[in-house]
Length: 511
Image (cartoon, rainbow, N blue to C red; front, side, top):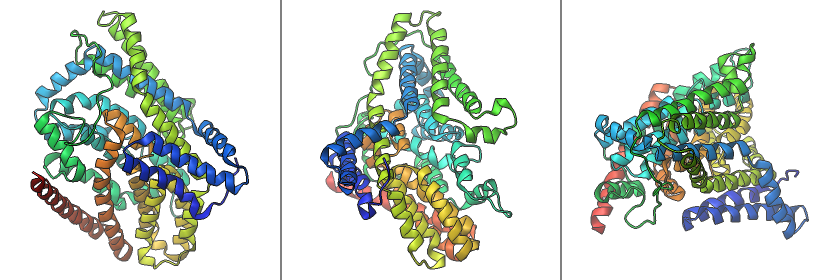
């Protein structure tokens, strides 16, 4: 299918899908309506008709579908199920509850694990959720809060880690010059990547204080007072997909640790393998940068499942039949996530054929900007584009060449700051978009209703983004990293305090 220039109509499909999802709290129909609106625009623009719109939807779905990612999700669901049935999750939860005896400790441990798994955001979302659910459940931390902590340590951490799939993508998009390589530009951009830094600071502050606000505060209050981890006071919530499965009493802590560590080791090795590192002539960083992440995850998941069957069946913790029943149960638990991901990929494809990215980037290129406001405007544009399309990589892949050429002509001194603003805006949009892969995988990893995760996370993400926008205004006119960071951090602390008091005041009036 050849892309067309749909102009302002190109932004309608993601806007419709996101608005409907937030209003109706139902993600499947919202995405389908958004997709169909886009294919109708395409079909009528090309003179095809309604039937063509339906066929276009399934054509795009087939083109955008990633079988290896779906396979990985199925394998991970199977792995989580058999670990649960073997009693590994219960044993780990009981052990961790003796070591981590507070809500603060459980949340900080979740943040720390998320920060440690910085190589790939998909891998981060699902692994952290699997490991930390038993710990956060024991400490009455809502699944919505767990999903937020997972999401906030996925893309925001990966975008400032020099050895990660995200860093490799940024570097590959940055046009190298005699004065600066892609790696130098990436490392130089980290201190000005306000969204990543402020998000990490925010989750630490929220973990050690009780400054939650908005919908999240109600989920947390319900978890603490009513032991209900899945809903707020009036929400429908969700239930654990694996609730009711038979659990062995023979499980030990290592029955969870060994399969998860195997998953990490196998996946890292497979990333290097698919990145041709073992063939020689490729550096470690280049190996990670060139890897097929989805294929590596699928191979790592399969390896971990083999380790699990060798660990459980010979010791008679699970019979072979029970193990295979667990595999089937686990795969079924991932059906919802697979459907949402498939629809999210499809709407991204719709945005591609309607040239949504071209329309937004052209607005930037054609505008006459006051030099000092370039970083904040680029931050807002990147945020809007990433939120609408659900992809940070696609966003900075489009904008980096534009901002590089623009800054070299107009304001060379703002190149690094503007690059940071591009990356920060892209991560913000990806972080809170309902159709983002990482948002979907975070809710899946936490076992949280997807719309509950989105609705509780957006107020937090927007709060950080507003502080970042003001910070980028300061950066654009001062180019001073300490003044920029200081301003943004002070604003964030003030905002958290004020918003928490407003939420408490509203709840007390309702009571």
